[in-house]
Length: 104
Image 1 (tube, one colour):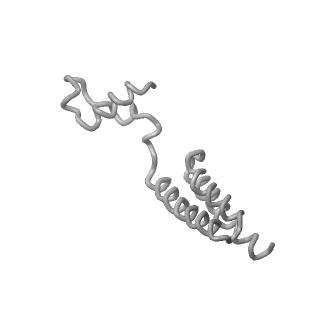
Image 2: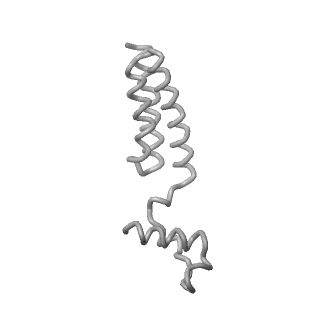
Image 3: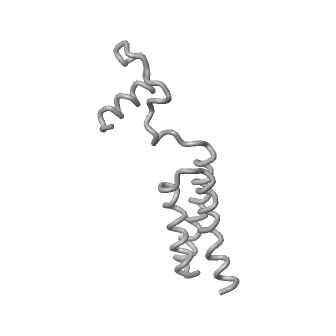
């Protein structure tokens, strides 16, 4: 799908009367990019906030591993599609620096 088609679909969704008599596209025609569950969005937000905290902690000199895990926490939701995998990968990135700090 190219950019012009995407713009036409989005404008038909937001303003169905200006579509020159054509009905607005159904939900099944909306690109997969816009189909995200509330739980995936919430998980991304929470782990992104934790990732920003880890990046700030790394900037303040608490270790470079926190910085790498913080960056990973901010970026990985773009590459993981299922909610459960997103939860457990984020949990792993969150706990990894703490486990290394206590046992390492």
